[in-house]
View (tube, rainbow, N blue to C red):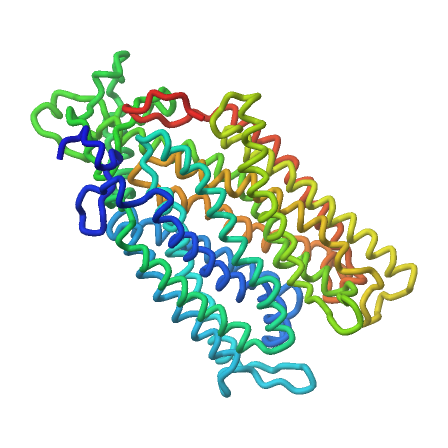
Length: 571
């Protein structure tokens, strides 16, 4: 095939049969509806069983607030840690399409088992007078199902957004612009699924039963599989580039073996193959950068290298720059952890706070506390088109950038909004505790006479922060990743959610341990009317402020990736 033939994409993508992808017949927005529908249904399934999970742990597994909260955040964290496994399999061996198809099977098995533990006699806990007494085997069955789901969702999560972005040829300017819009609508699809989950499914779980509440997500996951497979003839595929772990190890080992070698001032003397394509399958060549100079030693050509090329002694500039790109992403990754910690409060502390508030809507309907996350979802659904159609064009006029803001600026704005969300939650709790004190409701089992809808501002602010930070992360980690490690780098961005959940669990554990000394109830007792979770929200606001300041220093230091065939200004 002639490399200048405009009939084909120029980014190395192929069709399902391994042939060069025909531009007019594959990819672009024509392939995206199947991917977006898949993501919408999968997220509906995920949030449908996870949004109210903390209450399932409390009511059906008979766990306390702290235990239930930590179990949910630890499980949620594992879901995102497992993205590293899915990304490794996709980038190294199967490619994104077959990885998604394989792990969705595990996902459905986990959801089916979870449904059985909530509906099949002998597997579901026995309950009397509203108090459940699960056996160890029944509890174990629930956790086996949950961690199968973690494996399934973790396996596909880093691949779907990257697979969608693969449908746009970066060498084509019009398609490149559409790719930026794709990430916004991808996140929009996630939240359409979350909207149904946090409203309809949470209500079903609370008022109809957990069997139906978990069974419907299993059915939606099956629909997600069908949607994904229907688009097969239209998809573009990036070839897996082999194990990134091996390539990283080769650069480190080669650098250490050449500790005494001097890096030439003329960087064109560093080793690189003469071909237009790099030695890494599915990856374009990368330009040399001046940071992390020690790693350049891996590309220094010595007398011994001229006789024979050993990949554990001599690496290409592209291979070295691949490792540099990943290392440069790590500080940005770390700054997202505290944001994910604040985000995780929607599934734990916000719900526990909401459980104490008046949930009544009229004389006959009560809204479950977990359903308040619908306002986070509504916030995202409102903000995506506003951001894509209004904020970006206005920002473009002032900055001259096609995307309006740099991705780093976009993420920083989100970090700032997350601080406001924690302040809002803290103020809400101060007001709630004031009413508890004024009505002497410390030991009352009745609702505090304040509407649960006063929680809306904190949920809405979290949603606004997501639009800037989470979508910015998705796009940033995809764009800045070397071509052959895009699933891996997407997984790295998702691990911030995992680490955020683990940090949340750690903070809850530390706070509980310190504040319950000498027989005190502590900040987060089972009876929140005698607690002080407002102090926990203040703590998160302070940590998030420090995190934002550190992030600004990191963003100022960051050097953007450039390929050898991309001399356009980075947006």
